Image (tube, rainbow, N blue to C red; front, side):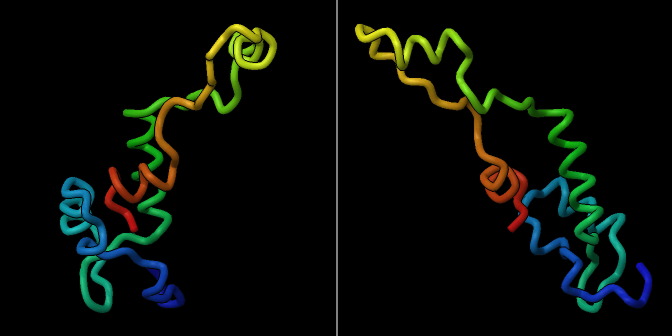
Length: 98
C-alpha cells in the first residue's frame, strides 16, 4: 500500500466476522495503523472469487412460461419470486463483511 492511501480504505481482520477471511487477513494482510488489514480492492477480489466458486446468479425476471402462469392464467395461484439471496445479505451475513 502506498502512503497516499488512508486507513478508511482498509478493512481489518476484526471487522470481518467470516473466520476464513479473517484468518487470511491476519496471515497475508498489510499492517495498518492498528491491525492487519486488506484494502477494499483486496476484499472485493476475494469475495468475487468466492462467489464464482460457490454461487450462481439466478434469473431476476420470470421466464415466459412463469410470466404466463402468473399473469394470464386466471385459474393459476402461481406467484413468481426470485430464488436466492440478495448481494447485501450475502456480503454481510454469510461473508461477515459489514
